[in-house]
Image (cartoon, rainbow, N blue to C red; front, side):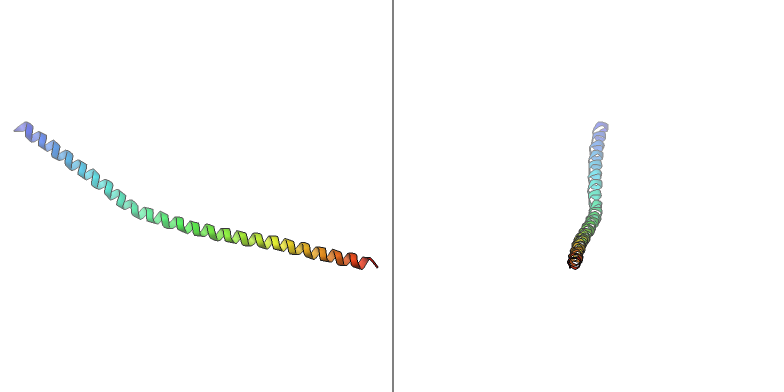
Length: 88
């Protein structure tokens, strides 16, 4: 009886160990869901901030470009007025 008892204890112990490891793995994966959700929320927030920054950059580029264009137009207008006044 000693050998069979020892063998059954080893088999049952091994089965319990496998069940425990499986439970810990599944518990860890469920625990990671919260972390994944937090990371996804942070990623979405960063994407939103990136989009807002990109929009602001485009607006600034337009302001600088059109401001430069308007400034050049005014300089050309002044040059033509000065040249027109200098002709008499």
